[in-house]
Amino acid sequence: MAFWTFLLILISGVAFFFIGRRSISKFTIVEDRFMANLNEKEQQQRRMAPVTSKVSDKMSRYNVKTDMLTISPDSLYAGKQLRELPFRHKSGVNIVKIVRGSRTIMIPTGTEMVFPYDKLLAVGTKEQLAEFRKDMNENVFVQEPAADALAPREFQLDSITLKEDSWLTGKTLLETDMRSYGCMVISVVSDGQITTNPKPDYRFRAGDIVWLAGEKSACEWWD
Image (cartoon, rainbow, N blue to C red; front, side, top):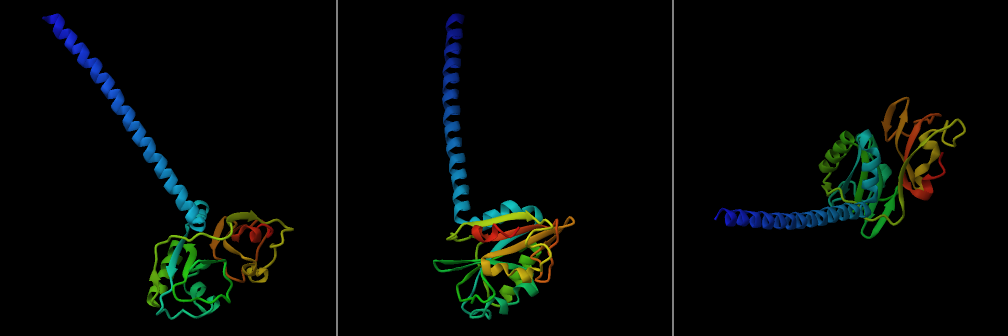
C-alpha cells in the first residue's frame, strides 16, 4: 500500500513539473510578444513624431519640451504673420513647425501667415510652454494633443561647440538670419548657464554650446 501511495505521489509530482514548465513557457511567449508589440509601438511613435521625439531625447535634461496647439477659426491671431504675434514677447517660445493640412512647414520665417486649423509646434521650457498655452487659450486657441505630423524632410536637433574661427562666433542671432535657411537656435549653454530661445541680440562667443533645430541640410554648416 505504501509503495502505491509513493508511486502515485511521484507520478503526480512529475506531471506537475511538466505542466508547470509548459505554463511558464506559454507565459514567456506571451511576455515576449507583449514587449515586441510595445517596442514596435514606441518605434512607430518616433517615426510619426520625429521633432517631438528628438527634442525629448536630447533636450529633456535642459527642461526643454514641445507642445502643439491648433489655431481656432475664431482666434484673434488667425490671418496674421508670425512676426506680428506675441509668442516670443509673452512666453519666450519658438515655433519650429506649422502643419497645414497635408503640408508641413519646418522652421517657419516671421513672414509666414497663420491660418485657421494650422497646428503650431512650439518649443520651450515647461514654464514658457505653460505661459504660451495660457496666452493661446485666452485668444481662443484650442489645444491639441502633442502629437506631431510626419515631416517631409529630415529634422535634425544637435549641438555644436563654437570655436574662435566658427562662422557664428561674434555674431548676434539676428545677424545670422538662420530662419530664412530653415534652421533655428533652441538653446545656448554658455559658462554653464543655459539660455532657452535666446533673444535676437544674443551674441555668440567661442565656447558656446549651441543647440540647433531644423532641416538637416540647413543646420550642418553653421559651426
